[in-house]
Image (cartoon, rainbow, N blue to C red; front, top):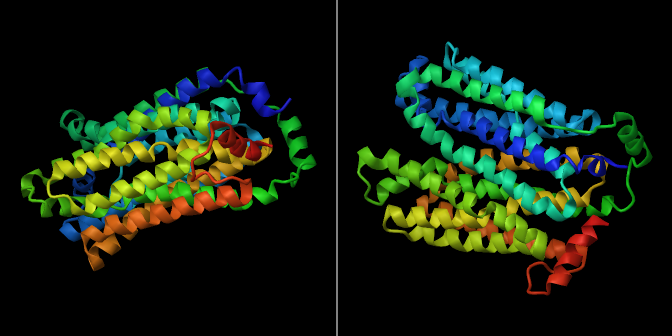
Length: 424
């Protein structure tokens, strides 16, 4: 009996704990956004340009760390079990988050944020566990629910960070965040169940060192990893210029930060509304259809964002974009899980997390450079073009390597055959 079969009786309870843990950890990581520049100033940085630069470096350091180590933790999850990786991430992040509140200078702040990414990654470890345990026919729905928890954390975090420092101070906020993650660690230790047979799984790895047929799926896996990177790149490309863009739309200076926060939250709110539904849709009609359809719709919704005349129009379009983006990651994770043998699931899902966080790092860099050299409107147009190219690539990949085009209308039976071809 393989790992998935042994653990299918646990996946519902494990999913509930992982949703809670992903929510609390991402609330703790994202709640510093409203006051990060203020904390940088408290640590001795005085120049406005330096404050902006150090804030960006400190914010991105966590994602960079996670992108580097996610495949390593995924490989270790295959060897030593998924639950130890969850516990390691939760305890490590609880300690590091508290230490950030004790930082004495901006260098320590950046180093601790980087270390939080290197040692943490609870949400990433959750995807590896749930993606390995959930029955294949429920994978899209379960990963959509898990994605909803993470997105909710990213949405609520900045709101919490906006008022919590008034009550406990900026440094105290980090201790609160560390305490929240500690609760998630305790819940993980006590409630998560896993039947991991290291000897049997190790024997399976040695017997199937290169599974028959898996090598032919690597082009498909590569395309899916690129697509996962594009999801975060598309969402984050506007982040460096959004406040400036809102200023160009006539929003007064004293309202720009508040409006920018609302616009940023709109995409997360849209994703929360549709992530689970689109994940379930992938289970019913096929993941390739959902991936190509969501990429096309997101690319089309991105274009009018370059021509809005009011900030609320941008917020509405970002909300719609969040709704279309939400179906991508669950469907991608489901296809990747079906494309590899059981004993390689953690490693490949780790690569998936690395690709996502790479997009979160690359997106702001690309958006900032395009906005600075070619104009703010071009950020949306270039991102839209990249999404449409990505949709074409996925359609071609599904046709070339699976034998059917996911980008054209077809029956539900054909779509299921496309997914089943990867499962065999």
